[in-house]
Length: 207
Image 1: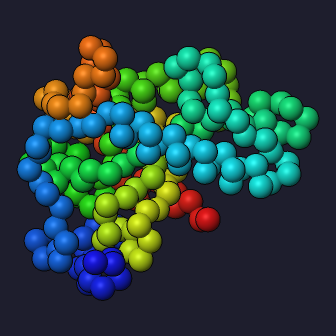
Image 2: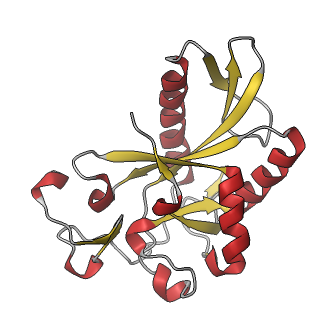
């Protein structure tokens, strides 16, 4: 059923009353984290964002091939590297965030996750290259937030995310158990330690 056929009780910006939600998220972990599906989903949106950036004649975006670096490299018309962009998919809602991270100042509907090791690596890369890095989240399966659309994009600079990280530190860090789908070709690739942010700490991408 389309999201616009439901009414969600918004308490404040992007914060909804989950107790009266007409399409409640499943707050019970089935221990199934399908790593490859998440990667495929993010790569499709990565291609979309590259296309969007390339619509501006002043910039050229392409997939970054440097290992460990963000997904996209952005150049100006003089072929000078201007910034990096990382793309993340957010398809699950952390329904237990208030119970498991009671000092995080987060509610389920606003909460986004990011691999902690990735986040710390981007902090280091930003200092090394002295270029801006933005992280983009594609939020889906959260109709209270996305409304009539099936998805929304939100982004923020690594500098601002580091400020939030330094403010909350361990209060927003959570380690989950490994589950089905984390192991790919005998290697554990699924994210088990996440850091969490609020949508309200990000900027909405206006398409």
